[in-house]
Length: 259
Ligand SMILES: [Zn+2]
Image (cartoon, rainbow, N blue to C red; front, side):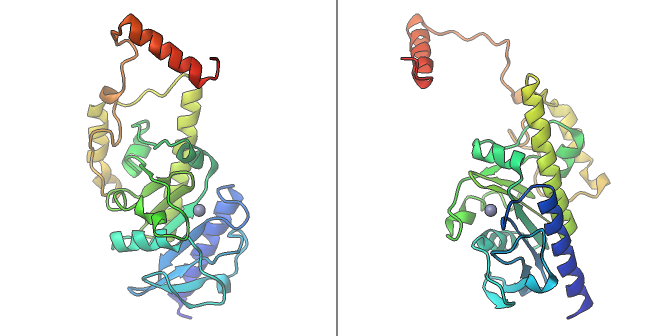
């Protein structure tokens, strides 16, 4: 086995151990892949705890995700890795996990798209939410397709998260950044709601990416990330008729099962 392949296998095993130790995956969840060369992808197998893998547990697949060597079974989530590699020739590694706070946002049907902190705006921009798709079917990756060209981290509705980069450590680091962002957002919401950065500051951060050596394909667009000027104004006065107001109250009571 060439030493670069050996090194890549060790990087994948280390990332799996760190994901498991941080509680981002339970039991046999999650998967990690890395390009071995232009035609082969190194992948974690199904049915193995990613916190406790040996180099020989990993399998090698072709660019369509079919196993070409290795003893263990291929994961049913291989489709999402293949979709990323096909959509992004610059990407060398993909990490998929179910980190509890990020996944909490995903199962609540919420993206992480607020401009909250400089590091996060620079490194990720924002994190979209892809539609749910059944693992083991093409639907798993269909929801991701619109986002793959523009983002390096995607939440998967009712499932988890996928992050990718130019190396295994970079893809892993993006998952760590995503989970950190989700935790901070959750705490800010518990403390009365986050205060979002204004557009002028977010523009400066996007412009500074080159200086930090960050390669993220997304540009500042309306709602991605959402800037302060795009947030609803809590002081804004809305006019409703008496009838509309009664209908809203009635609807709210029905939703809570009061009437
Ligand atoms: Zn999964």
